[in-house]
Length: 294
Image (cartoon, rainbow, N blue to C red):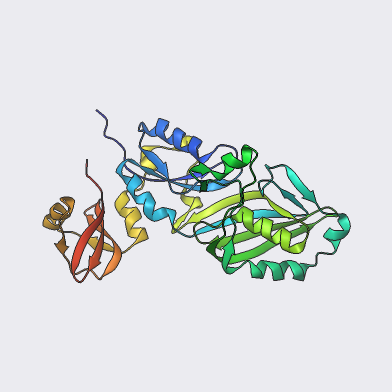
């Protein structure tokens, strides 16, 4: 009998398939049903998709909230239903309106979208409204306006600008908190400039401390590509190396005395195995999430 695989996998999602499709490929190639992901990418988007396999799916909770880096192309000059190139065009600016948009005006509006901002997510998103995904309601013909939420855009920089009579294309790089919609940045920038805007390309290059350069394409997924839960946890939070006795006690869910510094999340590791994520308070460790050992 083959052992069930466990670990974290970095995958470079290509343009076209959904994140769910990539998960299905991983299930097939790894021979297990227990695969999840830490944050979706739209079918149009490419880049880093972090998958959890086996008991390591429990680590995904701690990866979902990590900050992220994206590269994208924003097209100023038209708006769409989905705020990206896959949606029906809603508005198209005149050539005279495009010509009137100055470079320094673009820079000023980008500055307003940098820092801590209130952002209204794109209506075509996976956010649930009364138990139903917003994108399903939009596709059913409903008009959906989602509530604004606070997000942090720590970098919103233009790397290249290309102008024609009809559009202005901006290649940008964005560092942002979890829950930030790059499509919404394109929409809001276009609206602020009075010409409309949407995304024509999007690539996620980083999730927390993990980079797309270390990922593989979906069809190259193998068990050898899996990173251990212990290594991933060490990259996410402080680590506490356990004795045999401490590992046994934490494995049974007991509270354990420790010299580890107080912290809300600490990776409790025994050898090459992640035993638990614990909270340490006043010299006592309490299990927050356990990782059963097969």
